Length: 629
Image 1: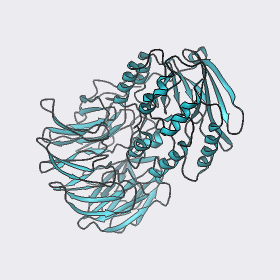
Image 2: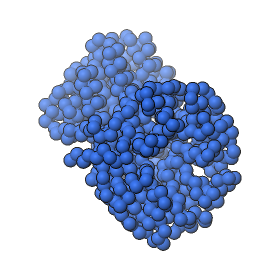
Image 3: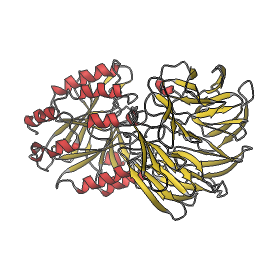
Image 4: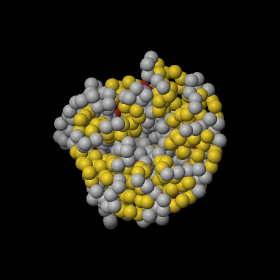
């Protein structure tokens, strides 16, 4: 058993981030032989918002844990609902009341909608998703599973896979290692084969997860999976999961608040017959290497699109590196490092390339050399894409604002402050007006010259997750067309913001495009369809529908139209190319993760980036292959 002084020491230190806890002399005194009994309170999917029901339930759970026989507490992610700073501060204030050592990983609710791009989570919990937690001769390796700052399937970052292997190599002799990840190791993760292979190669046979809110036993391709229950399950079930480690065995119990634990499973920690008898998820379909040409395969994730200045391609990585790549020589010309992941696509004009960063505001660099040209501080992370118009850049410089900026010197021409909520999707210009959406439930229209508000529109819902925060508005025939997570297609009058029509006929969501002549507005449905709408009609009128064969999809990658070809992509690395008449001419799978954005190069080729870190060059639909079954 672990001696009580360790708990006292842990409380004095605050949350047990891996480096802190592993470095304390008291931890070293534990040795590396797993203890006879290790009791863990496993809380996942607690979904705490200040004042909600789970907020009260967590207080009760912590009080109960503090007086029980637990040795440590592990949180499995989805601590909040929107990952907002207010929510994170509130739940952290509760977690530090624990008088036991504890650690946490992030869940998709912390990584998908974070207003700080993960900075607040990192500040509060002393890590950005990776945590190595030692207790009683056990090493719990926790890692994030995304998705990151946009709707997509989960995925383990390439740098996190490398980190797991480094931690395993540095583990103490005799230490028993357990995996901790919010997502189950199934097709919920686009790179499931990669993480399973890393865990197998590392000799890790047990993985803790959450996400599905119910206590369950899972078979992750031969790895024992323990899926914890949610704090609030249904209307009247309140509790968490109790784990008791005994040598090579594990007892799993449901612990309802105020009740005695109820043992649900008793099994071996690794290779238990009960687990091996369970079905695995079907084999994950792998990318077709002949589909398109993968020009760049990064060692880190890529959450941005690309930009071109002649033959030079610009992109950025999840490790905060902006790169200039010569497409002729295949060499990196220069690279510059920033602190934190980059989510904003680089853009350029007049010899300067600009990128929004998570911690350093907007940065302007010399296109040829990468030398610093200017820096513009921001009130928070810059995660949105910008729109270049001549020598000007329109972009949201941090939370609650939109600005017009001189690309040459970083001078702010005007700044419009609307309150709070990121403007994540690219803004759109038309008729002297700038239109953009924000994660505050509103769509805004500004005078592009002066930055003054012309009108703002809301779908009427106070639910921020239904905001047009990641839409790219499309303007044609004096009208604005959008599709937001509320699944409506909406048409507004550009001059007044008046609602012309609003339809929920299909399951539309965020991904849109427009024909070069402005006659057709395109949107992608959550059923894998590309739908074209007549922009001049007085009512919603579909002029074409193309079924890509994907089925369910929620990837927000914009639809791109170049000449007579329309490009769209999904959450699992598929790309479809459709002719203007609606004919599907190309269906390929060059990657396994969500696409970020398309961009046409000066030579006419079309490029697309994927979250896994691959950048693929397409050949204008000429490299035709069929979709795999």
